[in-house]
Image (cartoon, rainbow, N blue to C red; front, side):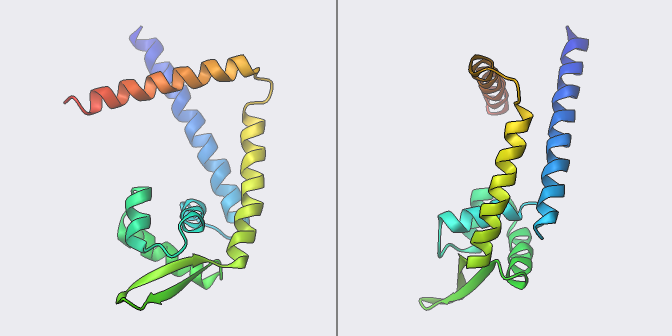
Length: 146
């Protein structure tokens, strides 16, 4: 049983790495770096948000967000506006170019996900989803009981 679990975890890790490599390759073809699609999507959903809000929501450091924001400003995908109530706090907005790249990237991401589950029936996808949820719940249960 122990060996079987190790092999299963190995297969899950390989799947994660393969998915991440593909995602990274596609991101770069749009002029985006790791994490930037999620950052842009957050700002699109929360116009006028702050870098601190992004960091808290995405679970990354403020420094990482600041670096990505600078890059996204340079590419013209994001813009800052000074908050008139707090001059040290900038509000962030996705530009029209940023919205365009997000839309195109979203289409590619959907295609990747579709290809990943090609040939699976609805029942198989439901079963996989329930197994994934059980694994996640087991991890969380053990993580927070220690």
